[in-house]
Length: 320
Image 1 (tube, rainbow, N blue to C red):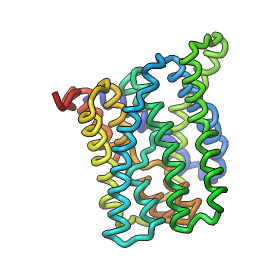
Image 2 (spheres, helix red, strand yellow):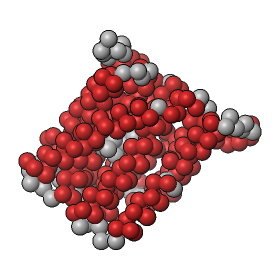
Image 3 (spheres, one colour):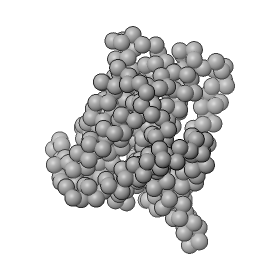
Image 4 (cartoon, one colour):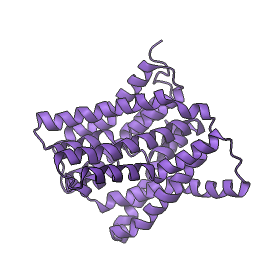
């Protein structure tokens, strides 16, 4: 158990420091802009490029892993969407944001740091693949569903162009693509360039976690949505459980890849869910509350999951 505490203390401790710093200094939300810019456009892309470019190309082309993971994630998305739309009679737009709250984890900011810390360098490739492909699909699904609802007033052509630009030019996806190319062609990287990338990559986790703590402090809990009763268990318990079972049923994956996918699935709701809600003027305060509550609850659930993984209680091969 001491090992788990040793893993989680620096991780959640950085979030707590960011939260406390924001509450004490009372800086405006705009003050976080440049730090977020550095994280999204420099530190995390450098980390993804470094990890992917150093990986054998055959490991980077596991389409079966990506398809299986995304299918499991979007089964949770569909479940939460149907609960909101059919059972609770919410609008399509509200149900969409709720579905993202239940299936879109904080894989960009929290995922790489925690997975590498807990599982080691072998977790790098599955983490990079999940972050890039899941984010790309989220960027497509959100505007598409909002356009169906009528919340997006742009023309269909404009929506398609904006989606393509957002997907193809996103720093995470671009850096991973460059990493793919470097791995495929065995590109020799000069020592000076490697050191430069290393400096940026080493800043990714601490800066991202600190920024997340600040973000949570700037969005105080004003309203607890009724939907939290099923979104929290769906995100923190059902999502990782389904990912684990589906990957095990398909089979043929390295245990570290399965553990990485399950760990990322167990992460709390992504702050991007609030951004999507804010962009379309839908479910904003409740999205903010969901992020805060799932993040607080994840201290317990992620700790338990890491204990199951590190103790060997979680079977590496469920189906013989």
